[in-house]
Image (cartoon, rainbow, N blue to C red; front, side, top):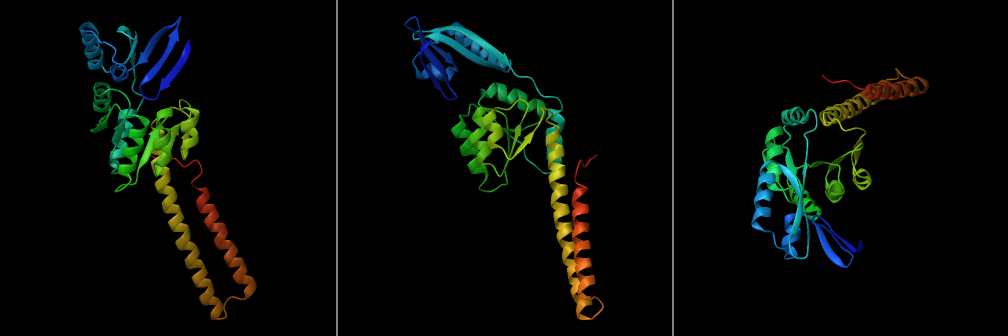
Length: 248
């Protein structure tokens, strides 16, 4: 293949034996004024209704073949979405897939709001718009997700299936493909915030009582130092309870 070119969120093109060929989505073919015949349109509509991703292959004149790819729902995806809703989190699907495929899978898992056929730039703009009035957590694993992951308030990449650039862009990396860990992550985050607040309050109370007792002459400097260190140890021990925390 010579003169190879890649168009982000569109497809690829190149020359084979001086003949130019294209491989990509329907939008990419229309942009290059490549004829999509009626029989090809019928197949595209048929495969789209079956929630399949469609890749067209053709030359400068017409579509020569159609390749279809079918996504599969990850285990526990529906349960994960339902659990997130219990935390008053509103899920939103941003995808580069066609609208038929996006709606098919969003209905399967219970996601109401869907935005499909998005380029990486459009995903980025959507996250930017959402951040104006919300705290946004972005979950992704593809190259196209990297800019949006970088922009989100909190970003999570799926380590086992994610691309290197998405992993580098994310704040958190889940070392596996079990999406139910997203719910565990939310519970752990909530528990961490509560622990931080509790530790701050306990530290302030211990120091406040120690200062009062010192003023009254009950505590001498040596005992005061010991009380201060005991307070620090208490805080550390309480924080260590977060390690390997189990949730129902």
